[in-house]
Length: 149
Length: 149
DNA sequence: CTTGACTCTGTAGTAGACTACAGGATATAG
DNA sequence: CTATATCCTGTAGTCTACTACAGAGTCAAG
Image (tube, rainbow over all chains, first blue to last red; front, side):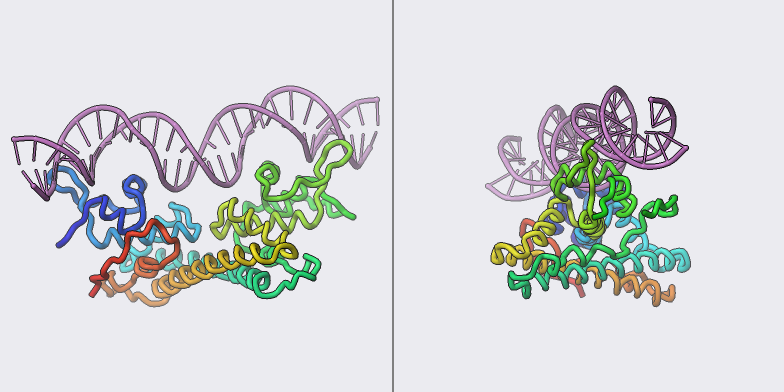
């Protein structure tokens, strides 16, 4: 079976060598087997995982979230229940991200395709596209005393 | 016209007070008018902008990108050409993000809905969902042959 | 006018995610 | 066998995006 050095893996995934080692330290990818001299020897599987990390990062997932997603894929044949629950949470999150991106998309289409230049700014609402979407439920402070004016 | 203090704005947007001031320093929102005593007085427009920032951040945009997006909305009636070009770039980016999220979504659906437990791991590919998506055009070295069976 | 909650500026510290060496070992072409 | 390109560990530095004070001023209620 063909294995690769860390440099080849880095080139294939578009990551830096130091970054690959960093991901290993952080537990995002399992430590690969080593050669007699101590060199890391990667398989194609590692490439897949690292590409996943790169993509997921570009989508705004934190390394902690990505670690979780990767564990989902690793455990997919194991404890169905907990895994499913986690996957369903992630699914909901992803759905709302897609929805928000599509609102943003619509607004941008509006800007590029329409907006003749005579509309008075309040009608070209990139802002409005995302202004009221319920994406991330932040640390709830809402149930404070509403000094409603 | 009704204006709000920074604390009220923070509560409305789910951001911290310090964060709101930070965004102002960073040029994400324009400095609001001040009261006689120097207090910032926000309008509903600020709320909209700050909510946009919060949402866009949750989608993985950096503050620099968000600044750009906000400038798009601010200039929407101005120099159509450069603005449109920028908007079109952002649009393409958003499209590929949506596509990647949808691949990830499909993989998660697969995990939650299918995956009876007897499949041998290579068939529940959350990894494969993102393994080869073209999200960020990194220093190109690709042209790799997919030896995948 | 006093009080207490709130805000101001400015500086400094933190967490996450890299990124850059230093100093030394290893692999491989010739 | 000898370059030289690549790899190793370990530590430290950087960048982004906050977050936390300190010390002082402001606002609204009573």
